[in-house]
Amino acid sequence: MEEKKDEKKKILAIDSSGLVASVAVMCGDELTAEYTVNYKKTHSQTLLPMLEEVKKMTDLDLDSVDAIAVAAGPGSFTGLRIGSATAKGLGLALDKPLVAVPTVDGLAFNLYGTEKYVCPIMDARRNQVYTGVYRFERQGEQYVLKAVKEQCAVSIDEIIDFLNEAGEEVVFLGDGVPVFRENIAAGSKVPYSFAPAHMNRQRAASIAALGMVYLKQGKVQTAAEHAPEYLRMSQAERERIERS
Figure: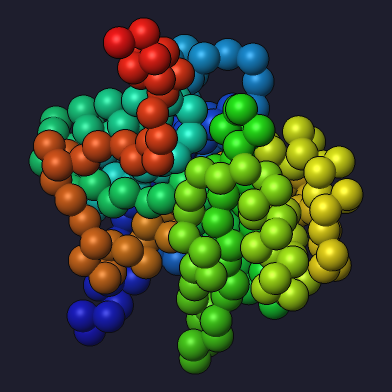
């Protein structure tokens, strides 16, 4: 009976870690709504109106939400701050826990169940990527996401070298693909492919689905505890250190 109760947990998910803004609602194993936009507008303009539209279209009572899942970083410094502030504000107002989902893990979860290695790459500028390497391990009727290489900020060449040494076929996805496609083609010694359009960017649905796994495992935090995981300093912080 307890298991059935867990299956009906409701999660509101937010991802504004990159170029995409995305909001989703998931109840148990059912995706109730997802609103995703990849266009030239700032997340401060889009995220709250998107959330309001989802709320209106699904008659969502925010008090009925059990937790708020948020893409916790790495990613765009501004985007992460907007997503974090939105999630924290909702968590504090509603007295709900937050589920921090690593951005790169969430991207990898787009390709749930694949037998290939999964390598999300987000353009981090300065010839670097936010990345990681993942595989899915079958456990009973489900697949579990396993990190072969935890999310990190490294050069594109370093992650290609890691994949070559691993010797496994790999699928790339993320906004770093169009930026580093030539590097991948020139440096890869293993079979590789690129995820299709409906799987190759951040999706709040994946944050919700992975967030549901974490929620059932008790991996939650209070709104006050939550802080984005940047993995490296912002450009402004680097410039300030260089001047000092």
